[in-house]
Length: 137
Image (cartoon, rainbow, N blue to C red; front, side, top):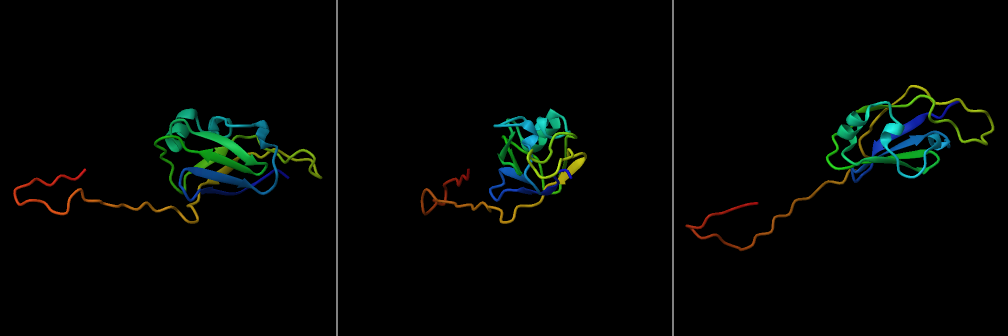
């Protein structure tokens, strides 16, 4: 039986997506940091639009693939991506021979506990004169 995706979810810092498989994989033969176009069927331009300029993918272990965003990512929860056919299979040494995953579409879930930005305004003075201009930047 081929590996199946259990979950694809934004990290709480909203700067990565983790893709978890239900078993250890052969990592598709990929090591280190690599272009996400090696994993997904979408073209490089579509992946750059989704994951940002200078995005990359990497495996943190044999069953977790991480998509790290570059600058200006546009992906939103619910977006769907498809893993290339004949790329990922179970780790060699598994008790049974493994088939390659085929046609695996993943939908991105919202983060469990997203980081919420907080805005703090600090005045440079405590009062503004009646005839003074107030500028905010």
